[in-house]
Image (cartoon, rainbow, N blue to C red; front, top):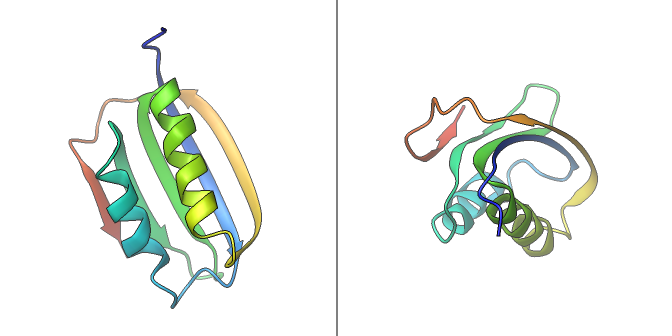
Length: 93
């Protein structure tokens, strides 16, 4: 199994603010080997930045989408190499 480290940035839109989205994402992240943050944006979207092994990120982002599917209308995702600048997973903003 590959241990390639990756970075994912996902923008969620829908009814994603004021519903516990960030806190739920933080709880989900605790069960995976990922680092990064989740934050509310002024335009009403939620921005998720996560780094970790590709397989962990796959499972983590699927878990977030499954748990919060009712609130999510659309997602925009980009992938790139991990920066290694995060030591844990936090809530911002």
